[in-house]
Image 1 (cartoon, rainbow, N blue to C red):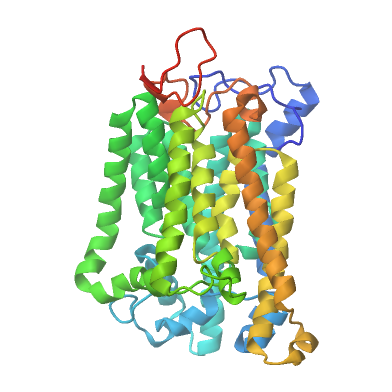
Image 2: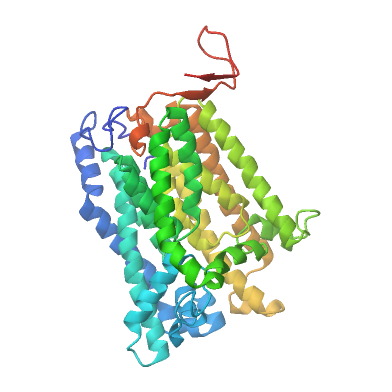
Length: 477
């Protein structure tokens, strides 16, 4: 990432895949060598291991026993879902996810739970077994973090591979890495995007399908990918990738759907019936009793939340098909995911893991990235302090580390505003592509695959043309 225009040369020219042009072109030799070193596989894997080590250190108080005390885990800011769900999902009692006990996550997370539960089963003491379940899960998540960071580096293009350090060493990612199993989905998603960039559509579809079977959010990315392929006339490639994703998802999910339909469906029912949860803007409206918005039923909130997201998607459609130059894949993926989180009923602190790779790819600049990271870190500490307040009635929450609703909502709104800021800047980069530092380097779209350098086939003309040709409402070319 950069907060200026330094280091722009070195990207591949439009129409070439990542890594085709030597990064030294146009750069000072020392800068180029440093960029290559920082973006090397060794440096990136080392950074992931360092970040994972710091993330584990954040959980050390819980490993020492704080997670066995309800308030203690919040006071130590070390909460994780992994340890309590080992017991809560029946894994400690030998129950199989979905068949023996309904699990609130998609199938591949249930599979990851079961795999690690089998490995720790010989340990006699249940609390030691639970701790080792957490430790082995951390190892598994770290492997997927390595995959995700390396894939992010590939997607950034050869001269910007070092920007993946903005994922590996992001403070908010380090803090949130081991709250849940989100790193598995992130690793699969970014690997799928890297396969698309390498023009391996079937592999991209398989990886993205597996990502959807882990966390539902990667499904959102097929929308912007469809729009980009429609604009570029690359629909065959889209359908190959999408069809491969559907097949991969069915291979994983269909057996569980048949054997344990009720257990499989719990995730989808929970998403529909849960009310506004911590972290979302709707929780702020609900707690503050905003007229109309904050006093609705769950079903009405579902409609409002979905409606806001649909409106945002319509705007993304217009932006994608109407921009003078076709947006980059990472820009649209980021905008779609960001608007989903902004409008969603739930926004957990670990969702920063979803956003981080797309932020550094969509807009590799330092300033707004740091603002966003500060806001995410602030929210991370605020949510645990607020949960102390929720747990302790009366003014005594201050003495045990809690905070009031004023400070909590300030952190919530700051995080919300930081993502809105990023969205606004990415939209500006799309509409005024001279601001896009990736394209200023001479690249079209390092993550674009078949889209990189492809001519447009469908473009909406939403305003007057700059040329002397008569303006048209829409044109197909």
